[in-house]
Structures are given as C-alpha cells and as structure tokens.
Image (cartoon, rainbow, N blue to C red; front, side, top):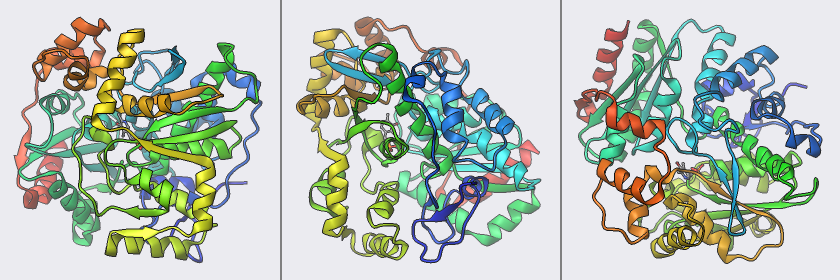
Length: 493
Ligand SMILES: *Cc1c(COP(=O)(O)O)cnc(C)c1O
C-alpha cells in the first residue's frame, strides 16, 4: 500500500505522493504534510544491532517514500551517508558518566542538520525527475547562520540544482560567515543582505509567493523549492538515528531487545524530537521523550499548561539554533493529539498568528503529557553542565547538547537515557571555553584555544576554515534580492 500525504489543516483532504510532498515542501493551504496512515514496519529489534546505517535507513524510509523505486532510494541514501561522514557508524553512541550521547555531528558541517540535508538534495532531484519536470531546482534560503551552511554543503555540486543563501550582514558570527564563504560548489551562492534575519526571511517568503516571479523563473528554466525543516524529506530521515542508537546499545550489551530507552533532545523547531516520536509510533521501545529547551522555553510551558504563548521576550543564548519562539513542526504533533481534526488544527494555528497564543483542549494535553517530559536549562545551568561533564569525564559538550544533558541529568531515570548530541564543541568554541573558565579570543583564534583544551583533532570543516580560499560574498538590500537572484542565475546558465 503506497503511503499518501495530506495536510494537517485540511478537513476533506486532498492527497499527494511522497515525491510531490517533497517537491512542494508545504501544503497549498499552509499546513504541513503528514502521512494519511502510518505505514507498518516489520523489523526484528534484535536485527537492529547488525544493520548498517544505510540499510536501516532504507528499511525505515522505503514505506514512507513509497513512490521511489528501491534503486532510486538506495542511490539517494548511498550518496547521503558515505565518506562525507567521518565516522563509519554515521551516528555513534558513547557512554559518559551514566548518560549516553548520540553524536549527530560527524557530517560535513559538524552539526545534526547534516543528517537530513545531506539526503534532501538527492530526494528532491529524484522527485523532480519522477514528476516529469525538466526545470532545474533553485533552493532559496534565509539563514541566521547554521542552516545556510548545512544546506549549501548538501546541495554542493548536486546536478540540476542551484542554491542561493541570504544571510544578515551583521547577524551571523565571523566563523559562520567564513563557513559559508569557503563553501565549494559552482552551484552554491551566498549573499549578505543589509538588514536582519527577519528582513531576509520575510523577503524569501514573499518571493516564494510571488506568481510573476515564478513565471519569470520558469522561463529562465528554474523552479523554486525550499530546504526548510518542515519538508518530509528532512523530517523522516531523522527517525533513523533513534533506531540506530537502540541497535548500538544492543550491540554494546547495554540493553535487552524490547527494553525501553529514553531520549533527551535539545529542541528548537521540534523536528528532531518529532522524528523520535514517529520512531516510537513505528514500534521502537521508547519510554519518555524529554523536550529540552533553553531560556526560550515556550515548549516547556506548553507541555505543562497546554497554552502555547509566543508573546514573550526573545532571549539570545549560547545555543542559537534553539532560539525559536514558534516551533513549526509542533503542528504535526497537534494534528495527532487532536485526532486528525484538520479544522481544529487550522483554528489553533490561526489563533497563534492572530493573537500570539492558543490553548490545547485538556484531553489532548493529557495525551501528550504521557509521552513527553518538557524542561529547560538556563544559560548558567548550561555552562555548568559543560563544566561538570568535562571535569568528570573529559568529554566536551557543545551548548545545545549541554541543554539536553543538564535537563537529563536532573531527572532520575531507570532505563538507559540517551542525550542527543547535536553539534560539535568546535562549532561554538567561545561558549565552551567560557563555560570551562578559560580566557578566550573569538572566531578562529578561539577554535585553536579550544583545541589546546579538548585535544580533539580538527574536523575537516574546521581545517577548511583555516585554509580554503574565501569567496567574496555578494551584497544587496532586501528589496534587491529578486534582481540579485536573476543576476546569479544568468551567470550560471
Ligand atoms: C537545529 C538544531 C537544533 C534543534 O533542532 P530542531 O529540529 O529545530 O528542534 C538543536 N541543536 C542544533 C545544533 C541544531 O542545529
């Protein structure tokens, strides 16, 4: 039975194939794509200990992307999870002082978004071909730093694609700007805009909605697509490492097949943890999912009270990828909590947009509370956790991982607890040095100082920062972005 996709907001849903949903990203009514019915996965838990990451990914994703042929999907997976990851296990698990850490930072940009963004470009180009498109795919992304780099790394030199990343000129760190400017690939382009992240984001959204722009673009041989985290081509591949972690614990003799484990997940847009929840629905023996937030703790309040309220102060923290007040992927969880009532989801999303908050009905909240435990760590607690774990074990946590670790450490557990480690400490050297009580410089100097302290070899991406030629970033004002896009495309044709 092929799995078809529908919108979270539809009452009488129209359905889409997986490849259509991947191409479109968002449903036409503004809702998110969810499977009409969850597929059945037949997987012997004991077998998890022996499957390779790529094979496991195939078995889990094939039912979700059911209009991809076996060879198409395998080819995508082999391109995505190969030598571009520095660990042959792709996502290894290590044990430090009673907590397991699932390391999602062995990809090309040393952070978790690589797990999805190394695969998405291949899914997109395959989907475009399947749907008979002869146009090249143009990815447009506004970034506050990390996603832009991870997306460029994923799309670099993928045939029939171009990617243009817009970042706020004064809104990203020196390292982040340099990471983007040293990206290879003739099809990757980066533009610094005057203005802040919201200006860039708003303009990109406008461009996506502009019919006359789309027509002009078609004439030039392109169609736009989005690489953002609500795409099912990013969401579902994230289920794989939850299963894989379980397999590794079996292999390490830390578990008996069938025994439950908990995960603590540093959460921003709710994509990572939602993939864990889907893994549970597919039969992974998962106890509690701990939703760990930083001081932007809108989700902690939501799971405790049922009120989602974004009308609050925005905190700039040392874990910037979690500095989010509207977690887009939460809409999918609401859809299930509300028994797939699309009209009700649409109403709550409308209230959020109009009034800045909504209240989940009591019964729905009660369901969620049995599956999620939500908590947050302050900036001081996060720094203290980096220090605690490093002092005790010599293992350096990045601030995002430290948020999840601090929250996990606080809650007693009787089953193995896996902290999802989403970034390498090399990505945030200043914050890690600060937490460890070292005087430090910033940027590349801080990277070298951190190396002196933690002694981890430099990952390739860091080596590149030191050595690779720096591309001059293009510059423009937000209102000039459409024109800039055509100038770039004119040069690549
Ligand atoms: C994106 C990101 C997160 C948050 O993941 P979501 O899927 O947005 O919840 C956590 N840590 C790091 C390092 C990230 O890049």
